Length: 424
Image 1 (spheres, rainbow, N blue to C red):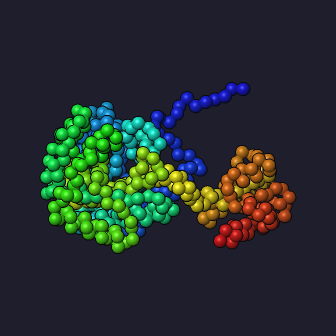
Image 2 (cartoon, rainbow, N blue to C red):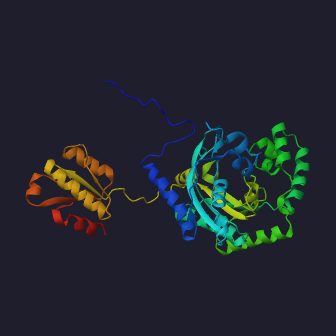
Image 3 (cartoon, one colour):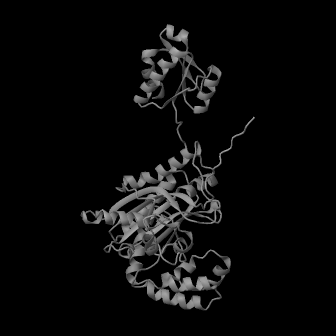
């Protein structure tokens, strides 16, 4: 016997989403998107690749994403492009290009869903191709917007049944107070025993060193100056208002003075959603305010705030908590035809059921009764419609309840109404 094995496999660090698992991913995406859609965010979709400089400028030259993880390439026409490693810069670029900020209705509220790419060492919860749902509010400096986005993400996670996640919150200051802190932190870091790469990073963006996950670095950071001690009065007041609004909404959070996000564009509010059931890759999502990003990529001053939540990480969090989503069966009715005449008739009835809004499938491939009923069972359908020559002679089909096993004859012309009544 010849065994055929496909020559090709999914690239290292990637995965295929296939049924039935893919249904969980779809449900997670929809659950994350539902609260933002209700809050006035419109859908945006951007290309999977962009000009490499969009990310180099926006995400930051010193970030691991740009220096080590970006898939960059040159096209036949000589353009330097990169697969998008994150969503915010692309969404802001699209909004600027379409002049959405000039239409008089700020903030521009957008949400998106898509795949992102980073050349990372593959491990559970960290892939080279991953999926995120994100939301961005562009063009307004208002602590209520920061609070709104945190509340909406919290609502999304809770709607999925997640309970063991934590919200970490911090302020990164702004262009007034951060330079003072930056100098203090650089002075501290220069006195540590750090490798050349880390010292170079400290000179470009010292906050990135605080985000270093290596234990040898973290140990030396004890006693490092904290940004909260350097915030100007305006940033302090802004942060207190964000905290007050979240608290009033009943959303629990933890102040984390060492929290810095891995992208250079964040200012003021920064937050992360972590789940302790995921081991080292504990972040399931995060975001913050990025008031200077528009100017970094050649646009006008547009203070903005947003987040991205990882679909893959959220699925892992659900597994860690043992939460099983209530996903309805893809098929409600499965038709089993015995004989050519029954096959033609039932195929027509399946089309009628679908047009009536009822999910229906058919036993393809001319299988016998036993094999076809196995297909009906596997489909998860609530009802099977079975018909043979004798049934057709009597003008009926057999409608079988797959849960109870009960079966009744239903007139062919009354099938759609009978199924609709039973599913109601």
